[in-house]
Image 1: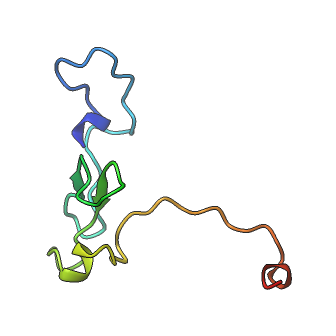
Image 2 (image 1 turned 135 degrees about the vertical axis):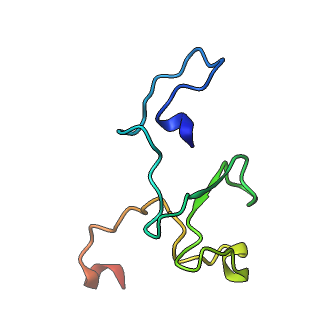
Length: 86
């Protein structure tokens, strides 16, 4: 993740920095985010998540049911609520 703010050695086409500052941000509890590339989940390129307030990986997180997992926002429907139920 440090490659988001500083150029890794031996990388010619790096166009960063991709984040401001000199340090990768920490999670809300002051711990580093967990990053896996390649992903440990089938069908995903990478994993990026927080271990949460306890700082420990729990079984529900291993199954992908983690409320602290950073997710890509899904597009919201622009239809009014009554039109979505039809």
